Amino acid sequence: MLAAILGAATHDCFDIMERVWRFRHRQFVERLGWEACRRADGREIDQFDGEEAIHLPLLVASDVVGYSRLLPTLKPHLLSDVYPHLMDGTDWPRGERIFEWTRCIAEVSDQTIAGVPISHILMTGVMEYCLVSGIEMLLVETHSKLVNLLMTTGWEVMPLAAPSVLEGSLILPITARPSMAGLLKHHELYGITGSVLDLELAPGNPFGPSPLSRLAFADEPHGTHQYSRMAGE
Image (tube, rainbow, N blue to C red; front, side):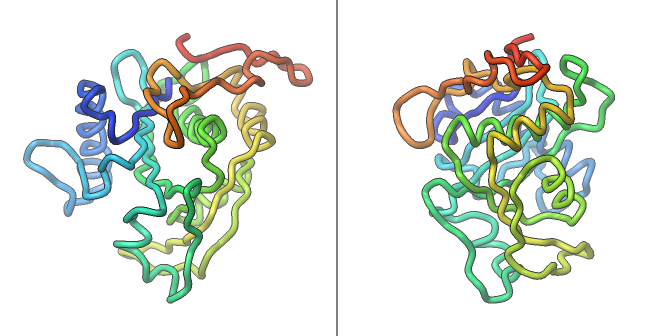
């Protein structure tokens, strides 16, 4: 299921992170053609993969099948250091509980988890992780197709600037807010019946020493659905 690894703890999760770096290289370099990120060792790592990053790999057995990364906006991130021109001179939200959502991808596969496509599990897991950890808002620089997907699956989306052309594609900077209503909408739309987080593989809270706790809804009935625990199935 979806793990959560703080950048400062990557040395404690060496085996998983090695699979993450190689998964990212396969997906972004070999599949999507990001030649600037190609490395001879087959590991896609950039300057933002430091101690403040949050890695969210989606695991099936020992295989990484999806991935997202969250970056704190009070530290250097893509919008601040690489793509500030997308804002056309205007500012963007920053704060302790505002993160940038980057490197989100699932492998192209017919594989499912409990009958749910892995891409749906990944998107649901990101929202659930935000709610569990206390992240209040995400910045995203993305294509209009993903903006529409976020809006129709329960994220509270707000454009930050007009679309810009980046490497031949229209890119829109937005904010996306998670909510319990949004998470339940994910569950309804995708047929998910429980938590998609594996908190045993979430060593650390980005905002303090307390371990993360699973949301209560995972054990409580909602309408006609019983959301029993899925993580670990």
